[in-house]
Image (cartoon, rainbow, N blue to C red; front, top):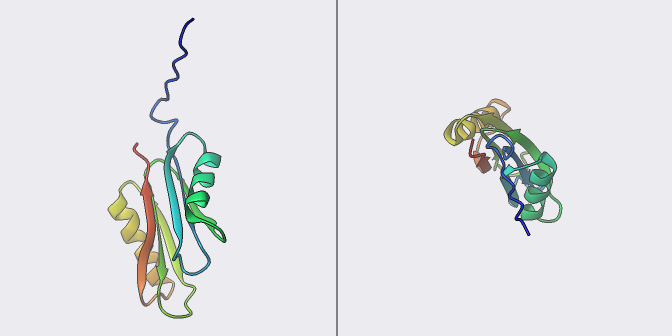
Length: 113
């Protein structure tokens, strides 16, 4: 009997997703390094829980989602970038540009390649 060895190359595991709930992201989930986008989306939704939806999918690099925490605000921003710090700062910048007065990063994630 011979063993079957499956080898993934680094570009195959490069799918991620961010999910949040409808309450400015108080519930969230993220995934990274999944072989397919469908798997990445499913994992982020599973981690987030009921009432959640995908706000961003990404291949390679990082993604971040920021939401304005001011009462009643629905302002948000998201971004993808090559590093987590850049993705987070860009998401905050977009949130502020759309009128957010109290934006915070609710969730972020990075693929390993």
